[in-house]
Image (cartoon, rainbow, N blue to C red; front, side, top):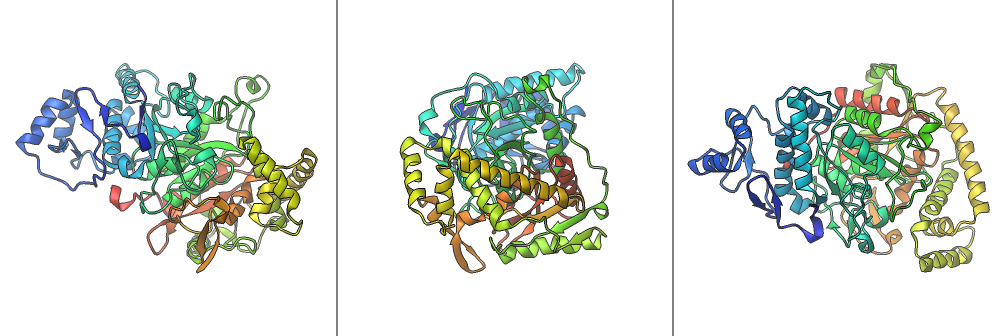
Amino acid sequence: MTTMVGKAIAQEIIHDTIQVPITPGIRPMARMVATPETRKVMKNDVPSGRAKRMQEAGSFFTAGRTICYGDSMSNTLPFQTAKQLASAIRKKKIGCLELLDLYLERIEAHNPELNAIIAMDVEGARKQAKAADRAVKAGKKLGPLHGVPMTLKESYDIAGYPTTWGNPAFKDQKVEKHSLAAQRLVDAGATLFGKTNVPLNLADWQSYNDVYGLTKNPWDLSRTPGGSSGGSGAALAAGLTGLEAGSDIGASIRNPAHYCGVFGHKPTFGVVSPRGHALAGNVAQADISVCGPLARGAEDLEIAMDVMAGPDEIDGRGWTLTLPRSKKKALREFKVAVVLSDPNCEVDQSVQDELQKLATFLGKQKAKVSDTARPAIDTAEQNDVYVRLLRAATSGRLTDEAWNQAARDAAALPDSDMSYFAQMQRGNSLSHRTWLALNEKRHRMRLAWAEFFKDYDLLLCPVAVTAAFPHDQKDPRHERTIVVNNRQVPVVDQIFWAGYSGVTYLPASAAPIGQARDGLPIGVQIIGPQYGDYSTIAFARLLEKEYRSFVPPPAYQ
């Protein structure tokens, strides 16, 4: 049974023997002393094998059925990487069902205020987990994600769930088949138990809609977790899931990773099949758009890419994918360019400062760092090409009325108007002849990037112009503003940094590198050459090891 949470929040989640009411607003609990009453809860309500392991570890349930973990089963367990969780299962340090229940308990406590996970099939997931436990016991060959509980962005098809993209028109239409990415993750052993929130039509750096409501950032509930994979980033950061997958056409993986302090990877265009990541059963791949993973560790990105990447059944008849692995083992082996800001899209000093600290650190590690090297591209033209191709790619989501209005706006606007609104409406109503001209410019830029990467391994730049901004549901979106260096600027202007790699099909990993003065996470965008996905991830892994790893939000530790 699929349980819908979020705006239409479920009143209970079914466990083996107990029904646990969801209580909004429960905060993380400090260590407590077990009492006869809580031992009774342990004895009566927890499967005996699990209860024994928990008691030996000094763990117990409170009278309110909130779990408290002892020293042996650390409170850090929900925040471990998918690789670490899978390893613990293989070594029989924890069972698959036990691990799933741990995350379900955290969801009961924390999801009501975050609203990151908006649909679950607990009964189905527990059946998966029990089968995974039997496979471990039988000594069967286990996949790289065996027993790891995970969720997916709402926009992926999962059998038995509706795929709505936040549109109420689709809320009652359940799909019958997994998307290809979901199926590959399940085949790799993941226990798929739910979906995470998105904005309407995946078109915002916030995550709210009329079906599931508003998702909040676990670092500051008054701020956005990002979008469109905002629920993915929030669930990972709060320790509610083991692994996630999102999609990215306008920084929709990179942006939530940056805002929530986790890792994300936007793959090279075309290397991960989008089959089953579409609305209303559409099958054509959208321009620029990609599917990719989010995680609490960079190595998880590589594992997930190993699982998700590759052609679908039809394309697989003619080609196979072999992405080159990075041979670099240390930061000093990399030659990187660093971009702190751009005249066409000013970056807040708080973000620039963290990027500069990273560049300084890399220099001390003997990496070759340039703050002037750039591809031979006019970034204003690059942004123009990106915005129009982006909006052309998403124009199929418009109603006939909205498309006709875009055509009228585009015809009435002077050629000199290069505002986001003007470029958006031109893109929304683009003629195919103009699209071909823009596509030619795009491919010339691809060649310029290829020349750049003959001399440099990577380019480091911002993901966005600020850390996470306050919730703002003002319509139309292009009239919203954020504060950048004490000035109000249109929030949509920062799409510039999404297109920096996106329009030319390049891979880009996002990794946490620091925090702003108010404690909000800040990340870096690591751009590599086309098909250099494992190089950007390898660099993120070294940063995780030597510079900064994932840090849980204080309220959820």
